Image (cartoon, rainbow over all chains, first blue to last red; front, top):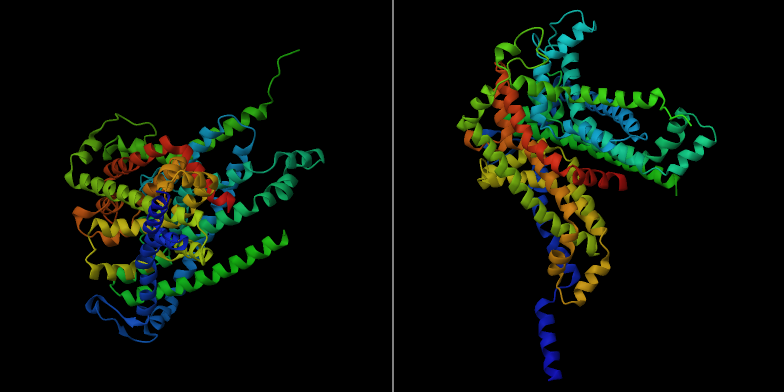
Length: 310
Length: 279
């Protein structure tokens, strides 16, 4: 009888036996199957076809053409303009949302009733779909009847009520930046606020007793305490804005004359409007290279920061 | 003792916050106001800051148009399927990452996180040519797969973090009770991770509801288009003049997602901040 039980246990064990490693592998199989087929294979293929003549006419057989695509996108400094536009856009979008996000977070971090409600209200723009953001701002910035032109004129900031935001390079860049900042600011604010609330109160209290004024408090206590949150959040915002497509594409379409054509828009235009998949991939590969270098620098910077404090 | 009178700056703080909220929410107010008025009122100066003769004519026009209803249907279908697929995949891998140690675990996590940084347009170009070969252009599964992929990095990390907060002793006691590894996951761990599942589910829904680029490239037939693409292609462009319908459509596209947000705000903020503040 006892032996029987023992046997049964053995059989059961055998039937269900799967080493921990094998089980973990099984758990991770779906995620890696998806990532390999949707991300890693396309990336490798993209790198390959960036060296190929690859258009809609020869979709099944890309033809190797050395650096022809690279020469093409560097001709007239075309790709440099896209990089410049992207950097300009990312710099202003992230810089502005950081400053305002920090300011609002500091405001809400004060001893305040109904903080949760205010935070919820400030968050609403973040959940509005990007396309909706683009069309609402298109409407508000409309040349003749747009409400923003009207308000600016009546506040005496502009001398005419008839400003075309999409016809001038600088204004077009400003328009897309405003719309993007409006949508992304809440995220930045919530992250920084969460960081602020994790600061030990005794730290700020003792600084106050020592006679620190608000500026010193911010400069020497608050900001250093939330430095990890700030670096992570800014990094996330930079990455997200590097990818930005929807708002720019729908507000300006990259115009006027490429003034707001970022890398995303340029790659999309090459591939899906001119059907030159090779040249589109070339822009993607150059972009990937820059991102790779930026990530290395970021990690190096971050490591140094961490080792300072260890 | 006299009643304590609070200093002026105490109230100024609230007044200033309310003013800021009004400025930040103005575009939403403007969209709403515009959606209740005909174009002839919108195209006039000074603008009507309060709706004049508000009515639902624009909404009736939108919701009796079959084409527009198809966009809604497609968006709901794609977004909810993405949520389901993304949850299944990230529950499994979150569990794997949280409970098992294996060689290359750190590398695997990094590989998943790196995905967020890859230029989506660049991937999309090759993905489009591959989808053409695989017959996945103009299919729901094509778009669902693409949307899921780019939700995975955050979902997996978040769920792993949520599983990490559950003590391992629970796993062990359920093992002693005779539960297998999958049973432990389903009947012991998942019920405790409901807030995490909600956070990931809502985030995924938001993300795929917002998607424009994948929808634009993968769905080329009008009957397959999702809301953002349908919205942009119906109203934006050189001859965009029908701002009233545009705003009505914009409001309608935002309402489902805002409603979701109002109900689940707590979980979303918890999920949002969990990742970054710890990291």
